[in-house]
Image (cartoon, rainbow over all chains, first blue to last red; front, side, top):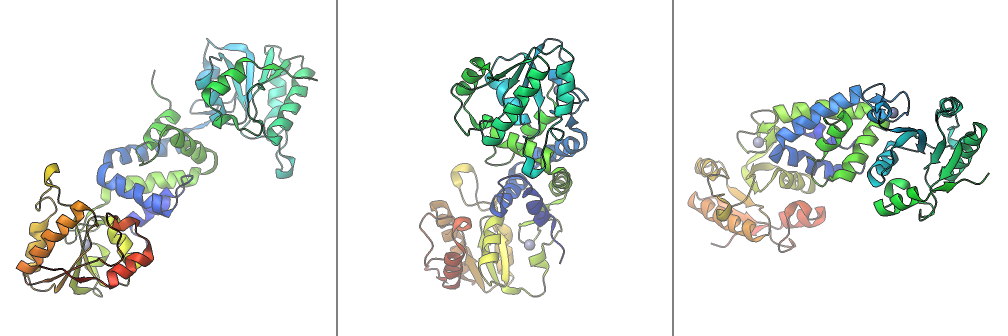
Length: 199
Length: 199
Ligand SMILES: [Zn+2]
Ligand SMILES: [Zn+2]
């Protein structure tokens, strides 16, 4: 027996993180009962987003253009480059701090056992960028997890190879903490009081 | 400044119940990073569902056809009619019990202060159906809330006016409980041990 459209809708909603059968049901009924227009708009935007959002060619963040709004902006300071693991971390820093430099989004972290090495994170392209001499400070904002620290260590060495000063968010960042989940005040403080990484 | 497609996606996801800014962000990133196909499928099914799912002309449940699968089925017992407040309640009973009769979905409950009277719940059409003589038992499965009980009382009288026997789920149903949230075993027991409503 083929699934009804309602059953298909419930099934499809389960692609969302943290949404099980029961939540998916509630979402489907809510949209059908009270939010037909909002549901239609979500369908339209979602289809367009899945098709058109790619990655910024410069910073690897999500972008529907070949250059994201931040990389394309004339008013950002191109001498500071902040490296984060994920687009969510980039967003958290942008919201919590007054940072006006550029970003580099790894879309992951070094994890040799999972086959994720420097190349998978685009570090060859990052090295090329550092070698061009425009960047003076590499702000390393990977998570305070084991893998995040290993990645930070690697990035610190990479920076020094290209005579770029590496700095790291340290003060107040909880050990093992993921940047995205740290509260705004703590993140802002840690970002502002970053210090040069030891060799 | 106009919103980027990603910002529009996050905004649109907030139409879902229980989804705030932070969850919407996480959902958007999850789809973009790991579930492009699932996201595209959700967009397609959602658009179709918002357009095509209406109400069954007989029972008022959601349906993409003019008659839902249950009302259209030749194998259901047309002498029993179970009245529920919502499609979710209908689904809960269908999953928890072996009930083989038909349903009537109020899509609400009597609530005079909110302007919801018998007509808004389609009770004129229900009365007409009861007057046709096919239905022998009206199983009243509205919630055990104040409004649900008032609705049940009204339905009981309506049934008797048309010489239909009204019964009510009672045993084991928690006071103030909403049917949709009662566990399967309790619901199954309450449904099986329903008793005729007092006059
Ligand atoms: Zn960019
Ligand atoms: Zn029906």
